[in-house]
Length: 176
Picture 1 (cartoon, helix red, strand yellow):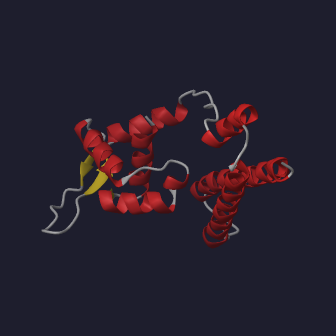
Picture 2: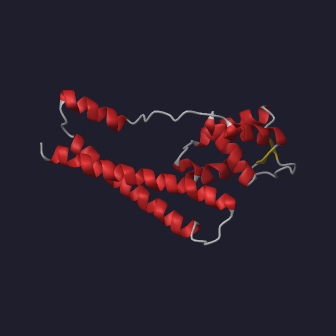
Picture 3: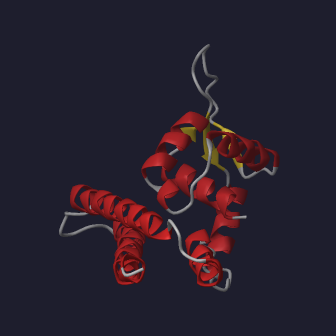
């Protein structure tokens, strides 16, 4: 149920059209909660039907997109969701399962895949660090900005973890 909450969050930050939300997801929320264009539009329709959002009162002219805003019921839903208790989810990564399978069927080709993953994580880390430098260099940020930075720091730390783990795992495949 997190995609609707991600959309409510984004709309509370700034009323937007579906297209604008898609673009914003690609630049921020999508790093940790990805969604396709179709998923976003489908959720917008559900959120509107549930009375959580509505199109902004102005009527778009031909070619303009409808922008949505969050209604009090949507804010209440998001506030309740933030306060809920939820256990951490188990890591569900196909690469880890493939390593386990390699222990019984052999690891042919898996070393190259680990190298590829290492490169992907290194690039993602570089992107996150560039975002951090660009968006969070203000020495006196607001409470909202500090929380957004914490989310980014979580992403940075996860990428560093994967880089460290892959660097540790790769010698197992180079020696074979």
